[in-house]
Image 1 (cartoon, rainbow, N blue to C red):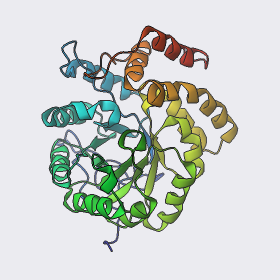
Image 2 (image 1 turned 180 degrees about the horizontal axis):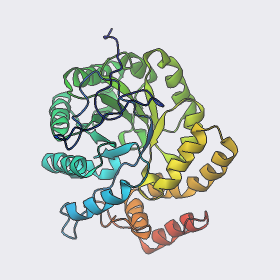
Image 3 (image 1 turned 180 degrees about the vertical axis):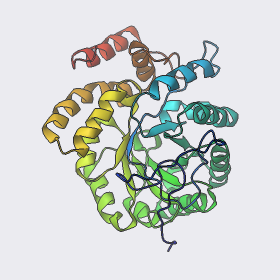
Length: 335
C-alpha cells in the first residue's frame, strides 16, 4: 500500500532505541534541521505535553514559557510535545500555535525532540498547519483525529485524512487518539493500515485500553511502528505490552519521577516500577480526567513551574477542588 520505511541517521536521535548514532551540530549550526519525511526517528522516551502560560490578560507569556523550558531541559525527557491538548491549542490562534513551537525549538537543547500538535478539523487545514509547524522547527508532528463530525469519522475517512497529511508533511507524523476529548478512538484497523505509510512513525494512544494498545503493538510490529502511552496512569502497563514511551501530562509536574518509572520498566525492575506507578495514579488522574488543565497548572505552581491561569472559557479550580488536588498529591508522598 505504501513505500518501505527506512532508518537513516539524520536529525536528532534518528536511530532505533538503544543505538549510539546521534546527530551532532557543526560549528555553523545552532540546532538540527527537522527530520525529513520518511526518516525513522526513534521516539522512545518520555515527553511532557507542555502547558501554555498566559498573562492575566490571557496573552501567551513567552517569558514564563522560557523559564519552564530551562527547567525541563535539565530532566531526561526525550523531548517535548508542544501544542497538544494540555497546551490549550484549541484556544490559541494559528499564529500563536506556530510561534510557541518556534520559541520552544529555539530554547530547547538540540538533543531534545520537538513534537508539535498540528491537527485541525479539515484535512486541508491540517496539511497547512503541519507545513507551518515544520517551518517553525518541529522535528515531527502529532496529528489528532478530526472530530466535529465524529459520526462520519469512520476508518475510511480517517485513513484518507491521515494519508493526505502524511503524504504532504515535510516531517514524520505521529497519530493521536484521545477519545476523552474527541469522542472517538482511532480504529485499530485504521492504525494498522496507516502504520504501513513510510511517513507515519507511530501513535500516541490516550484511551488507556491496554488490550487495544497491545493489539496495535502486535499488529504493527512488522512496520517497526512505535506506540506511546498517552498518560502516566497506565505507563507501566503500556511498557509491559511493548510501548516505547509516553506523553504524560503528569511529567509537567513530576518529570523526574515519570522518567524514573520509564527507566525501571526498561530495565525490567518491575517490582520497583509497580510501587512507583501506584503512587502516580491518583495525582495523574487529578490533573487529567478529574480536574483537567486547571489542576495541572495549579500543581505546576506548587512544584516550582509557571502554570498560571487558563484561557477562557476554562476556569480556575474552586477552593474545594484545589484542596482535593493537594490531597491527591500529599497522600501519595509528593507534597
